Length: 91
Length: 469
Image (cartoon, rainbow over all chains, first blue to last red; front, side, top):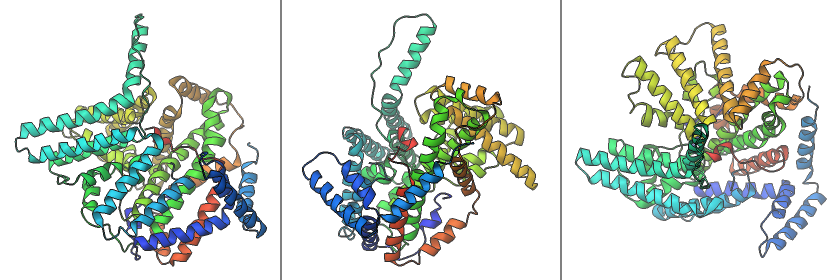
């Protein structure tokens, strides 16, 4: 939050491109599970090209499956909670 | 393609995946990064890839020409030509219509009826940044501060590297080019760059976006309709919004570059805790203020030629720094205010900053600097001079009440200010803690944070403020 300090980046820790990719891949899988709502929204805004409908259908089925297992709950809860805080009237 | 979007995440995962097989092939790796950067830039307007390519080729050729020319006068001439072409490109694309508009206004005021035609040139995203990269390179080669770049790929990548291409930080050739001459550094921790990226996402998606939509935009749209307290809070809100917006971009740029094995210099360092304007400019947009210092203020003579010349040099530097931000008189006014403030501060404090040992004086100095910066932001943010003066006039009327600022937006302002006073070692300690996390925990943790930030943010992603510069 306080801005990038060069020493933050210089922390030692065994970085390799393979490890970066592994972390990103694990992150993407987690995001697909917990973030099926924004994923679906993203596919709805994709430009109209061949294959877009297929991607959207797949995202829709995936979102339904995640809803069924309750994985969309945390996203919805955070969204509604912050909207409720935001909606408190001025003054 | 904005950083806080799924499009960018897909793009970055593809780039990171390509880095794995290319790890042992240094030149192919750089070529791939050039291609990826041009693809990234083409997402705005592919026509401008030719402009970026031309700027890179011209800068590369000028550097090589300077390096092989022993005659001092001829070297100066080449440098002058190289910088002139760079500034002509910037001037044409960014300032031509502003120039035409200003000339027409002057002609109208003088009673002349003939008007120069507008061309309505589209501003290429990031042109101010890559032009300053190009100028710093040729000047540094001329001064002998950086060895000439011998590979065209390195120059193409230096000017186009996608994390910094559209909104900085302005990375000096002497800082970045040596990183391209050897394979990128490995062995660093992944957690700290992820922390910067997530912190940047939070600042942009939650803090900057909500402050803009819930407070700053409505108040600046029609300032005459709001109370003094709303106007004051909107000015504070804009100070936090622009800090969160711009520092978010550069934090993400630094983090993304680090994940690819490259380092960028820091660009912000808690600017609103400054106790003088000089200190503010050492903490705000550090890469621009140090660029202006080294390539404009010092060549003008800096503070070496007496008090009056120092004042003149400060004013010229800040005026040009103001107009760098955009082709409008309000940016000139913003630069002029900061220039005048710096001159006044030097006159009062002398050339050397004196930090008081009295805590009360330090608090008062911080408050004074912050409010001066907020006053200047009013001109920066307002659509026109008229709006800015209406804003200040209405604020001075001391109208009671508060209709726009809410507990939520006030909370965001307080949070934004609190980050300015976090002890300097806090982020470092956090980074050291993250460095010990296993890969799976980093992936899951970063992803959960990213989804939470997306859930918290308003719908849609507003462009970064500094994209227009």
